[in-house]
Length: 155
Image (cartoon, rainbow, N blue to C red; front, side, top):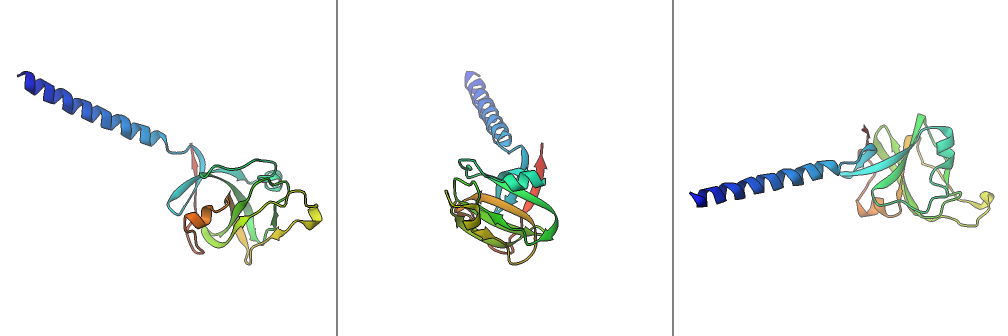
């Protein structure tokens, strides 16, 4: 009888432990806006106003590997980006209709360069979204032109 109770107690503890691990895993899902690409979720800061788009990531010291900035435009165009005030390298992923159309990788900041000397980055074709990621992210995760990009506003 005592052995049966011990087995039941062990099973109960295993089930309880499993539930705790599952609950903890569910709590790791990011809240707030995210972009899904290459099977990964990237927590993004939205840049959907002109002021936010002009500021971009300027003045910041870096991004963690699961962070980015998601630029949202009202219409497709060949928007120009530069590295003004940037302190760390990035990848720029150009997106149109939820598909990657171009990728600029490992763009270094031009610290100390005059605004007139900063390199300009522009896609070959019009885009309606742009994702800035930590430098090298697109290569490490095998991003390629034509890959899908999904945006979610998690709460």
